[in-house]
Image 1 (spheres, rainbow, N blue to C red):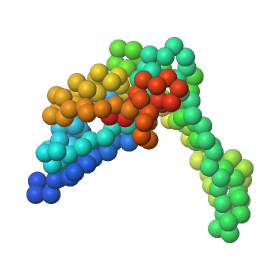
Image 2 (image 1 turned 90 degrees about the vertical axis):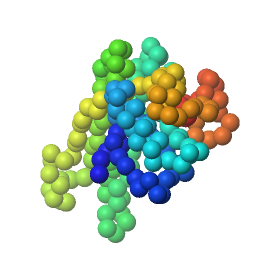
Image 3 (image 1 turned 90 degrees about the horizontal axis):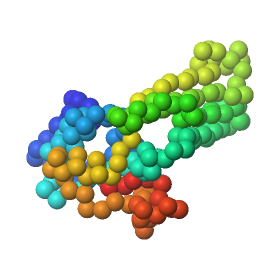
Image 4 (image 1 turned 45 degrees about the vertical axis):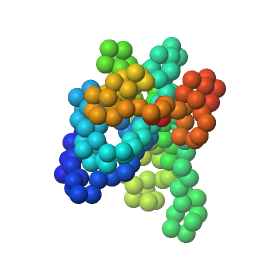
Length: 179
């Protein structure tokens, strides 16, 4: 048992590929955690295995504009398929603190149920809205390269998205760092 910083798989059954997607690596906010994660993956892989990492593009780290703020709405249906409201999700806030030394941003994550009457469906008014702050590290390409090498990997290439052909330096198309 363990977490993404410290785990073991049976040595007799190594994996060919491992993926760290959706910025999950950002939850590891110091180098020791990242190195431990990479070393655990390296031990679990075949000699020629591949690790794919997807992170926000480094231009977010050095941008002088507000942090990325994403929002989306999820329509909700009752047991009969009738629309019964929506879940609004907000990722990031203009007032999120960023520490330039540690490169850790305190990201606000908020979820709110809309169009749902709490008396009608037994949902507590306390569950209508949730707001949390999550520390997330922003990485540079050079950091990922160095941390990978320390852990026994080498970076073969970097891309600006998970789809083929998006160069990491493409100012128009690159919105992720994929290594």
